[in-house]
Length: 273
Image 1 (cartoon, rainbow, N blue to C red):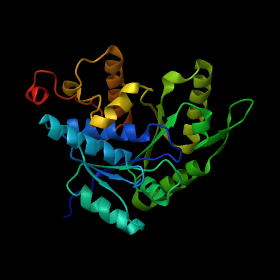
Image 2: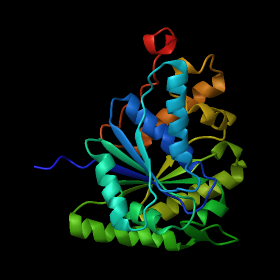
Image 3: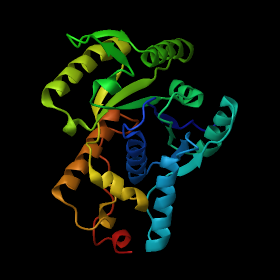
Image 4: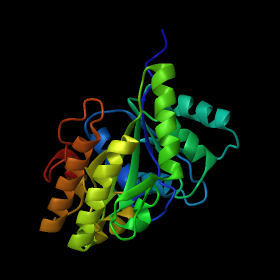
């Protein structure tokens, strides 16, 4: 009997600047801290944000003489869907999770990855500019007028997959950067998302706030879960780590209903290395 295929988590949004790769990296590391074997494919060979994060993480391990939970990552540079599936099967062999980070633009491989996902994560900033990706609202009432092309694509794919495989895509729209949104506008978006979720069939989860720490950690490849290697943490960083635990619980991944391990505490062998 063939080994069970890894649970595919695709992070997809045709708009850039939504914190997609940052969210994907933190989810990958959180799963690895829980003991899961994580593989990943970066579908953006131009920017390679996800892949570069883990390259930086590997360099930090060598520089500090430490071991950090991580993921086996490959950047896809092929030209056909069949090539992508070959890469996904090869790198995902023996893994519990296969994470696919897609470009922040319309891309045929990103669409394919979205339709093959077990869990599809679409991060959005809390603005109607980003909301327009999945639905259009009335300018006066802010009520949802129609699904967008992208939402219709996922809707039709979910229906076809449920019929052919008896398996649905769990689509989760993650609200990032909510802390920088004016309260009245936030309520309008929340109401519109609730209305649209019933029509398009996605769930809504709270994501990551806008914090400088996420950009500062990129060169080292560290995450907020690596608390034993970050030095003294401020209150905002502790709150951000709690956001990450809440996000992981909201994704409801297999065996994912418990909080993520925060990583080694200061004073442990790994932290002292």
